[in-house]
Length: 238
Image (cartoon, rainbow, N blue to C red; front, side):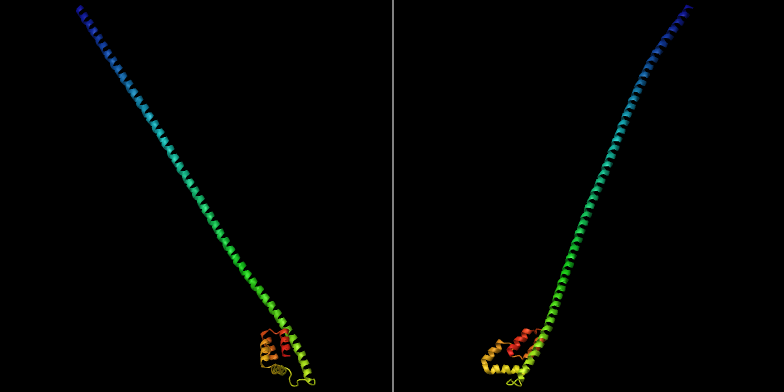
């Protein structure tokens, strides 16, 4: 019985040792499992942190790229607006220059046309004045000619009457009246003064070789008949 008790006591002791051994091994395994779990959790946490950091960095990079793209787009739009503004300004300046040039050309054309019209008007005015002067001169000449012709005719009538009265008087040159009387006077001068004196007299007096009546008709035909010419011719011819 004692032996059985001892055997049971040994068995219980062995069981307790085995249990203790199992407990120790389980504790060790548990600790190792806890360590592995802690390490795994730490690794996961680190991986999560790394992933978060990477995502944050990627987000920041995306934001930076987006901002850079927006800035580039804004700069491009600004450059386009500035280029358009410069083009519009250049186009407006060119249009203004063309407008000024067109106005200058139009003004020059108008001035040239005005100058031509003024010159034309001046020429017409000069021609009109000249025509008016010529008309007045012609009228004056015509009036003077008519007046002179009337005066000459009156003088001729008076002198013809006087010559007729002298011819009818006793001792006069009968039969030498009018043009025949002039020819007689010229013939008498020629016979009295001699050949040379008559030639010199005829050269100094252009009316000596023209009959009085013919000369008056020539002067009247040329429109140069006046009282002075008639008087000179009459004085020369006697």
